[in-house]
Length: 215
Ligand code: B16
Ligand code: MG
Image: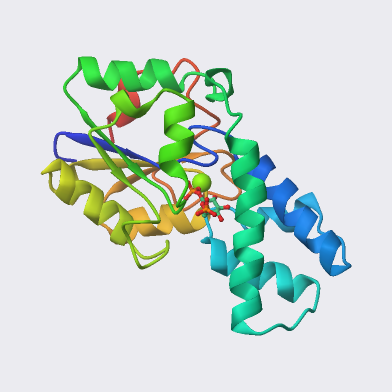
């Protein structure tokens, strides 16, 4: 491939495991609605936008509500979620992430966030990671959810690089698809069984070197 000029990172599941806090908040909502929501069910919400996640949750519980009620449920869940992530500390950054971000900076490779979350600024602030990013693209800036490539294309645009010069790090299938549709290389963080459409898959960032960017 062309020389790599930028790396784009998903947030939840790549930089920090916020999925557990999403789970606790969705579970609380399901209990209020009178059904159970399991950790296995929660897998279906990874990388999915807030409103789409609510739709999945309601379908699991076979609950039918008006659009207005959906908005107030999503707001309620978000308040509980924000309570959790307000307490996030730097030690929750996933192993090796900070070291890899530092390595990229030292080698002149630009860094952007490409997340579906509308809470990404709060999370990055609490993790003290803002200075590591040259651009932050999140759920507040895009209208189309992954697997649409919008979030990553906007990232490349804000960084002033071409899509073919970007590598995306993602933990969700929809995110890998978004990267491929954007004409970028995709590194899956997690298991090859789930992320088999990625160009490479690694379990995490611990010990990762710049060679990961060679394709
Ligand atoms: P919020 P990512 C995604 O983050 C999460 O994986 C997904 O579970 C969540 O519903 C979505 O953000 C929206 O988050 O409710 O905070 O706006 O993986 O794209 O970084
Ligand atoms: Mg993710």
